[in-house]
Amino acid sequence: MQLPDALQIYLADSELVVTSWSNSADELTFKLEKDVSPETGRLSFSGVTHVCMPPALTIESMEVHTIHTVPTDFWTASAPRKSELGDSDHIVLVFGSFGGRYYIVAEGVSYEILQ
Image (tube, rainbow, N blue to C red; front, top):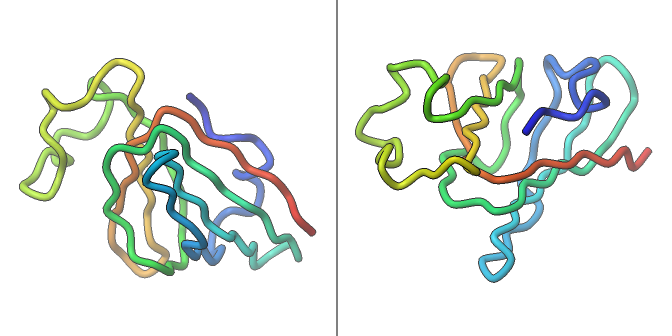
C-alpha cells in the first residue's frame, strides 16, 4: 500500500477531520482541507483494524509502514500487538503539526479530490 500521490502534494499543515466510521465495512473516512492549495478531499481507509487518532488534527506528514518497517518505538502499550497484525495490514503513521504521532492500521487507502 502507498499513499496516493495527490494526497501527498501540499499535505503539511492540512486539516484532517473524521467524517465517518463504518464498523460493518471497517472503513474510516476523513475530510482533508489543504492549507497551501485550496483543496478539499476525502481520505478513506479500508480494512481498518486499529485506530489511534483524535477526531480533528492539523497534520505535518503521513508514512506507510509494515510490521517490519515501522519504527521500533511504535510498539508501546497503546499499539496493537504485533502478533495481531498480518501481511496485508499496513500501519499509517500520522504526524501532527504541533507534535504527536498517531496511527491507523488498514489494508487500503484512497483519496478523492472534492474541490
